[in-house]
Structure formats: C-alpha cells, structure tokens
Image (tube, rainbow, N blue to C red):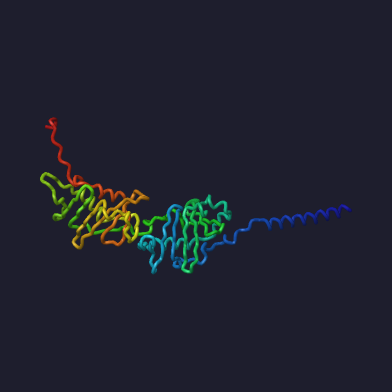
Amino acid sequence: MSMSQTNRLQQILLIVLVVQIALAVWVFWPKPAASQSSGPLLGDFSTDSVTSLAISDGDNTLTLAKQDGKWVLPDAGDFPVTEENVTTLLDNIEKVQTNRLVTQTDTSHRRLQVAPDDFNRRLELTLSNGTTHDLYVGSSAGAGATHVRLDNQPEVYLTGDLDAYNINPQAGSWIDTLYFTVPQTATTKLTLENSNGALEFVKDGENWTLSDLAEGETFNQNAFTNMLNQIISVRMTEPIGTEAQADFGLDAPQATVTLTTTDETDTLLVGAKNPADSDNYVFKASNSPYYVRISSFTGDNLINKTRADFLEAPAAEPTSESE
C-alpha cells in the first residue's frame, strides 16, 4: 500500500472516529427534562377548583374545606376561616412554575425535605372534579428559593411563591382569633368566681369598685382595669367545636365570669387544661355556640385571682428611725 493510500485510509478512519464520538455524545448527553420548560407545576389547577386543603407538618394536620362557597374548619364545628388567608395560599400554589429544576433523583427527596416520610409541609389538595394532589413544600435554599415536589413525580423545583414558614397547620393562622368582645364603656358590672371565692365589681360613675369594700380598704383600680381589659377582648388559640365534651371541665368550671353591659349579660367559663397541651384551657362564652381554647396566661389570671389582688397594699407603719 502506497503512502498516499495509507494517509487516505487514516483520514477516513479519523472521520469515522469523530462521527462515532459525536454520535455517542449526542446519545448520552443528559437531556433537559421536558418539564423544565416554564409552565405551571399543577397544570390546569385554579384557586376556585379547590374544595379541600389539608396541611401537615408531620406531627399536626389541619383540614380546611369549602362548604357552600365558604371556607371552614370541618373538624371544629365548621368554624369560619378567613377566606383571604386561604385564597392567598392557593393563588401562590397556582403561580408555582417548573422552570427551576433542582433534581430528578428520588434519593435527594429526603435531603430536600420533600419525601413522603420526611417533609417540611405536605399540602393535600382536593379539586372539584375529584382529583387529588400532594404538594410537598421542603427546605429553603435561600431567599425566594423553596424546594417543592408534586405527587409521586421525581422532579424537585425551586419556587419563590411558597415557603413552609407561612403554611402553618395551626388553626390560629387561618381564622379571626378574637372570640369574645364587648365595649369597655358599655360594661356596668362584673363578677368573678373561682376557688378563692366570689368577687363582685360595680361601676360607680366612671370608676369601678369592689362591692363589699370594707372600711379602711382601698380599691386597686389599675389591677381591676388590667383584668377587665383581658375579659372584654378574649382571643382564642383555636376553636374546638359546638359539641360539649365531658373532659372540657365546664360542668364545674375553674373560673366563672359574669359580665353585664348596658345591652346584655354574658357568662364566660374557664374549664380544664388541654391534656395534650398544658398551655391552654377550654373556654366558653354564652353568646357563642363554639367551645374554644385560650392561652394559659389568660386562664391562669382568672383562676388564680384573689380579693387581695384588687386592694391597695396598706401603708407601712412608720419605724422609730423615720419618726
């Protein structure tokens, strides 16, 4: 074989090799996932199509449901939910896009907290057509970068439209927590009964006093005003429902407040502490169908008050040195 033929053969083999390498690169080069192109993560999902939403952090689950066009807490006697709070979350879910792909590897799910058994938040969505979705909201990779994953799909994306911190499985995050309120100026009489006895406070003109104030005793107006301000505006930690339960402890309440205004008389009962959470008490106002829980701070204040708490301390006797 001549030198020119050898060179020609080498050139052909080199060309074939280059083509083979190029073909191999084209075949095995990682392709961008089709879902990586921008588009909504939940496809045709719309805020109005959601009929139920369950929020879980792994330990607690809160269910919100739409009934007759209104959002409620079905596990708390259909207590009304602040609609704006729910629609804001659903609007943000609708905004989540698939243009920031992080991984397509199942083994990364636990590390990013979007695995079925290890997640930051799981949102179980039920749509009006019967379709259900599990949306996992995981760890944060920085400002505007929260990991999310849908259903059983392996893809994990980043989004700036959701973050777990603002998706709380506690009822207080989704409702108006103001449970009982009356105008202070309308109150005319208050009685407080607990294990320390019964106290009656009456309004005398613009001021309040203890009805059985003895000679030489001075009423502590500030102490009473502090308690009154708590009573005329009671906030709950969560609603329980409309059905009374024996373990509520309201058949023998730990404290009873009767508050008279120019328009009505309301009774407030402080019941038992929650066995699962000692930081709150069962509470019931006579003008509401709902039983709720209130903070231990408010409950303790009513349960532990004594007559002496509403009296000014007697002036100290002068000592011989001061004389």
